[in-house]
Length: 117
Image: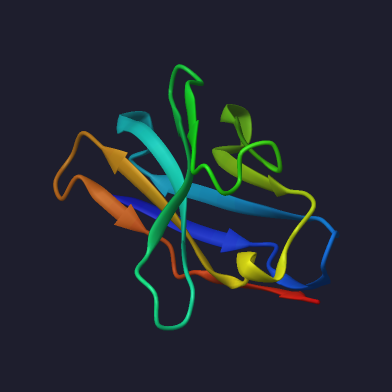
């Protein structure tokens, strides 16, 4: 299995920046894909950004040009750099990994991001 621990959330004013980190441990050699999801109160969890082992990335339209996902293989960590934050970015952000061992996916515990207007 793969264990994920997020950090870096907090309170920021609109227009500000935050960087989230997701540290992976366990069967990290089997990870194929990692991503950030978010869930706002009363809304469904949605994909924010993802990255493959080949560094191919994908982003939600709502964050393109503002957020950047990256990875540091030496640290087994994936980052989400969030710039030009908006109040609508307020949510709990979850790290997610897909890997080639049962059960095949893991979620982190989540980190709160609050953007004030």
